[in-house]
Length: 564
Image (tube, rainbow, N blue to C red; front, side, top):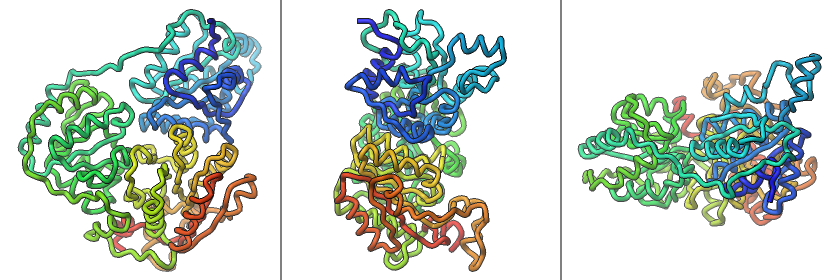
């Protein structure tokens, strides 16, 4: 059977476990979309805008399959660039499938200086831009060898865990691809050059450490290495933490689980457990600005390997893959018998976790006027009573800090954007996670982030995704106010910065605009808990809950930072 270029890419996506492609239709990619629609095993998810499509593909790719997105050339691809940057930074396998200009388009533009549709007139803009935002980017202008080049790009996305860019001239989609292998088979490369140095460093430090701990990161999820990593943790009897990016990679009911190190604002028991350790072994972790203090202060006490790079302190070892490193350290005998007793949070509710952090936090009442901590107390109680397999998506906002303490006993059901830190990512990314996992989304987002992507509510309605979206409604970009001028929260009567203020929306009326769903507004813990239970019972449609809180309210972590 012969395949066109469009049909070949459709086949390869299927073979790689990708059955949903997100996008906005355009003439440059319409033949590819037609191929997807014609295949009963594939689904094209038509999003409201291109940024939403990019975020959704990113959310899909975080679940172990390859994400994919296709939008119009130029005006579409450039609009979704931020979503692809998110995938690059947080190492999500994703394919951007783009339709590009034909040879005729390029020659006529060069000869007559008349721009083809969506051309900037300054060369191959899409290709140049996405070379900076992906692991590899190519345009396929010749059919000879096209199948092999496309295969190589898709393998790169999986082997190196990140986005790639494939551009097909619009007039080549329906052309025959020619000969190709029936199946896309490959074996992931494992680099071992730094293995002996890494093992010796770990062996030496672990054997002499008094308080060793392990940090487990997102690469374990990307490459299916969770069981192997836990074999090391359990055989050595080591307390372990996750980062916010890797929260729920293991059930938080595990007796050795000690919490989420989301930043240096994390509860004191967590920061002390990690930062006072004399041997921190980080496996598959990506570190961003919120980990800077921890990484610098630990110095030579930190031993890490992630995405083919191993380090002891600031010293970079020869190239080493995470899989090869874990395989090697799993052959070691038990090296530490100190019995490090870091307090576990296994089995604790949200409130109990917060109570355990009292060395840093003041007591938080959850009745009366709703605040950040009350929102998560209600969510924690709701999850504890429903026992439903929700997929939690936490947007970048002040709620990121207490959100790290939501107890999650299910595995691989949490999404955040803590390295790239793009406000607004969490809501549309949950669309992708839903199609990848089938789990009902529970989204917590700031009002500023939601206003950036609010049209995504239409996609929840159109696709009957029964998401529950809790909007922290304080009328401002509160996280920016906190970062720029925290004195607003400490000085009574002080006005907020003009440029962080938002137009107040009646989020509860959104279902009237988008022709479906449920809209609610709450301002107490009891009302929020009731609203969550009401939404849970209506599993046939999405629900948006505006959780109204005072503008000066802060999570306990941020209050402690400001000394209030």
